[in-house]
Length: 230
Image (cartoon, rainbow, N blue to C red; front, side):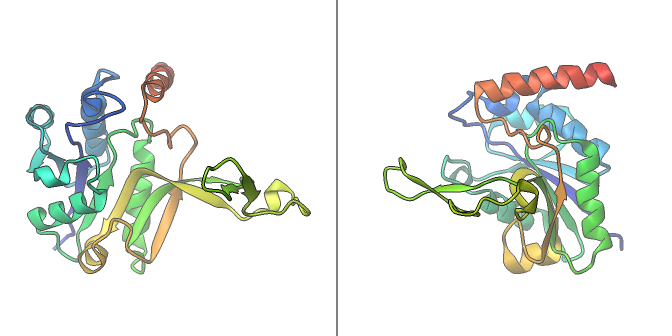
């Protein structure tokens, strides 16, 4: 039996930074419909939207996605994505050979090719349990050394020795855009990044996560340019 490759899009109704964020206009539709379209382009077996919100549910169904009714306790400001994934895993009866592809609705500039690359790398490497998107960099990192946060000290270098940037270790931030998770790792470790874990590098633009109105306007402007180039 071939493994299922299932898309999961968490999309709760509440949001503080931007009201009704997941339904904000984007491209020819909204952020949710855009991500559903991307999931479909990535050739996923099924696409599910996890939500507690009736309007989001209607939008998801109208776009051809299926819905997981998320319990209210998993749709608060303090709810974790791992809770949402674990709940969905039970509802969908994820098997060890299946692949769950977690896609963040608020990462609209992530390319479909990057989603496909996460899935391909996981499927072709049996020892891996998760592959997710990361933006690589060689930053000079600093950390706060006081409770007030007004005094900072070097973290990956020192004041006495400042290496060339290219000699620093490669660092990366987890973009949240895409996680391809093997069912086996999910069932046994019950987190969205079970080990062994690997990554797919994405550009600074693909890593953009919409959290503020400025983020949304920036993503809209960039997407317009992308669309004209295609």
